[in-house]
Length: 445
Image: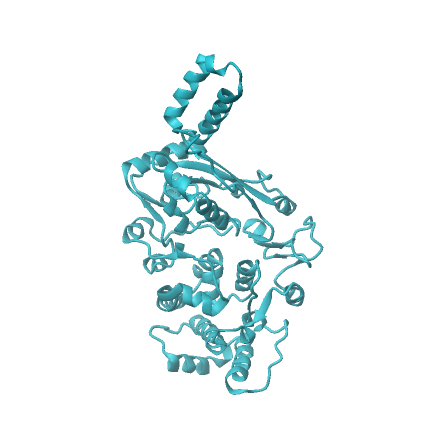
């Protein structure tokens, strides 16, 4: 993994915490949430305040995410909104945290000037025991306050102010007045500058979870279904439950709900270039498995590799080649049905509210396209990358650093249409590389 870290492809844009004041605030928040502290004097945190270095120190990668269900968070700065989310258990978690920070940025900026804000993404499930429990997670509520309880005290002060204004003898209540004065020293003037956080409830409809071997849940569609990467559950109350071997059924589900479009019919993209690159990835995989050195390949080298290892190329390669000939040279329209290994390589998500989730699923169904996997499903990419031959690791890392890192927004737009800002993948500074080493600790399950 060190190669990915060095190229800014892993742990990019984590927020560096090094000042004694911020470290002290972090420890107070960590003690408040988890009953733990860190002895580190500097470390890096993601959008939720999770630190890989602290996780290693505590021997607990889920120290802010007990049971992997109700993720806790520590905000030291609103700049954390630009950071990625590590050890993802639900596909919606980062979006919820980022939206919460952006909706309350001014308030959070003021609060974090003097204290850490600690909180939790709360749902009605404390621990998942069966897949059925997942469908009870319909709403995520954020509970947050400073470690010193400034928001709670501000709410108390507001209530006291209301009593003072409305109760007949409040003007003569010395105890009430003294308590108001004392509380106001901590909260400020809540009548002129009310301290409260907005928009703390979020709907969770269709989502992916790492639990139970990986599940894509689409209960909120006209034709609902679940796609199970691990063992198919017996108790999931959704009519249609598929696994990756049921290609026809998954294809029908995507089609019935109008969730996908073919690359060649997508507007504003160079479909030929996308198809060619997917074929190159399939060629590289075959060559890497044959022990070929993949250093410094150009277009001519790639063609030679395809010729020399034609017997190793998967059937998906030949299907994409037929489609490419049609797109470039007007060859016969190939019949690529959902039974064909190339089928899911030819698709991208349609522009729907479920676009990111569908692209994530397609990355799972087309696992030999490392670019799509890296962009759409980081957890899967890191887990898969660790099992590749060294030559393929080097090729893919170099390709992503050269072709993707230089223009992330452009690459996303060209491949998938307009994509949300994912600046959490930016270059990580060299100090984290020295500390984290190979980082085998990132969990996929």
